[in-house]
Length: 256
Image 1 (cartoon, rainbow, N blue to C red):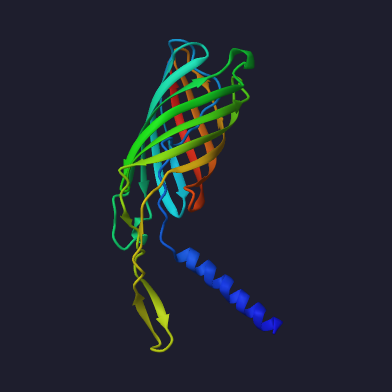
Image 2: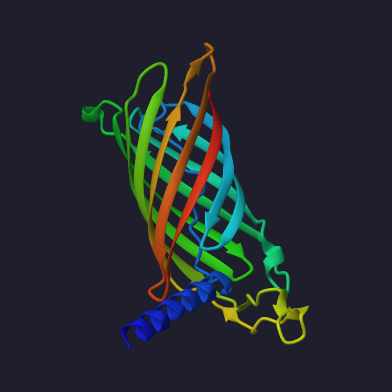
């Protein structure tokens, strides 16, 4: 009796894992910030910074290529403000039966404050972003903290932030998976299997993100080049389902 119970339980677990691996994507409302590689030090008063960051991400069974263009201005020696423009492209759209627009666009305005008493080792960040994609538009405020060991050569940094993404004009998206070839033992032939039709509509999503990386400032006199590289891990939920995302990004900032 126990052997039969164990066998039944094992089959149920296998079936559950198989169903999860083959299920259609669950759409979440998107974060507005992309490739957020930054140390704690702010720009000096009157300084400008332009740059770009990008990389690859895997988010809730969706593969993404992403890039962000950034501008920063030193409002004071402890406060900088800026704006980002972000482009993300879903690269595994072929898994869906009916192709949808793979592009996710967003822009963000934000600020960073590094208290003078903490000597550029700690900063607080915050901003508000808005964007659009196939499932509608969204608004996403964020708040975070950055820790770094500031020096002239190699600056290691870590950051933690939280965000909320609120759908605006949310749209239902057909996320039915593409048909697949399966072997039919009764006919001893491979046959094309249609997947059940599924739709998903994003709901308010909230999550946290951790980032670790390094920044290498190169002083060229009137201009400083600052390449950076890092990895991130996020966990998010919409109250119905939860998921994780991880990414690797590289960036370059020019400070003048």
